[in-house]
Image (cartoon, rainbow, N blue to C red; front, side, top):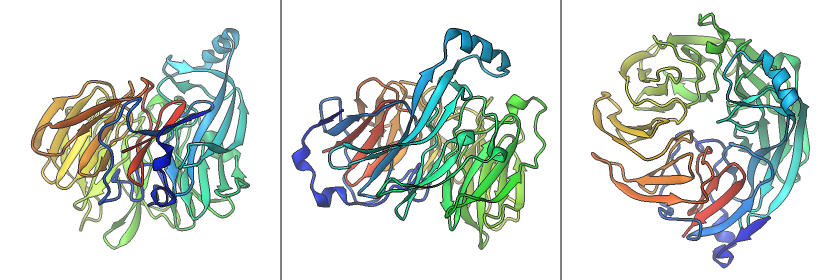
Length: 435
């Protein structure tokens, strides 16, 4: 079911725009295409181009190629109280989990002009799936859209590639050696680099980074994590997403895992270097950002810190500075010029000098945050778990431009720019907001 408002404003020119192929955009920075006048004000009944009710539930961010929008979702069949009680006897982690009897993992193709669901494709069905944390979903990894093919990763439940036009499934991979115990559910999104689909598999029982051949889904390489971790298996898991960057004249796959950040050769998975955080760091969710010859990352749980590692001209990255207060466990940082903006899960927003780490200011935003911010049209957009997006103007002090509330459903996914509008995904709805 969908609602279309102001549909007459949408034209073929309007919907044919720059790609947003993966979580946080083409270069993983969270920066929207430049020179476009994006909306900064909306509400449930203002500047809504359309909204669509999505079947199931999911936290993955939308991706698009200008003509096709894709999101993933999960149809959940709850476990009975008796089944839940019995299965949770095996739970050695957090008690705040969702337990299902069955889950259907799906990909949804959506018309950017109207919001109509064009295809609803079941990729996998799993009986008695692992439980997931209450703040997670079974469809949290965002897909990757490249050259008419959609690449899907559902954690231990499997990987797939489908034709973006026809919806035909090209390949699937559910190999047993790609199974891990997530404990809190899948979280790492895949990336595409050359002929490889690369993702993390960091469970409590096994930790590795994997590359599949994107053409047939077969394992190209799989590299076990080599860094020494805490003995408790619950402190060995991770949910971050990797990124590839030119590092002293060569491509390096930068990967945050429990207690360590690694650099790998993306061609063959060979470990090139690793750096220990120096503190306990696990259940990594935030994705690193790059700039000024540095890697900026959060160590995530338990007490998060922001670390800036200088890699330009270094054989192994060296810690340049760190921020020990106000760091996020879930939202990723965003770099705007020489300023790094970081909102933590509790709504503390910090602005620091990206070169020196010097704190410019720190203020509190109302709300709790999981989604990563987006920079567009000279503004930064922060979406929270109550369905509110706070828009600020970057600068030497907090300058709130607007606070925009939709329907009260949590914003766990990140905004996806499409032409001069945004796609905003809640648990069970997709909005297109624009002027």
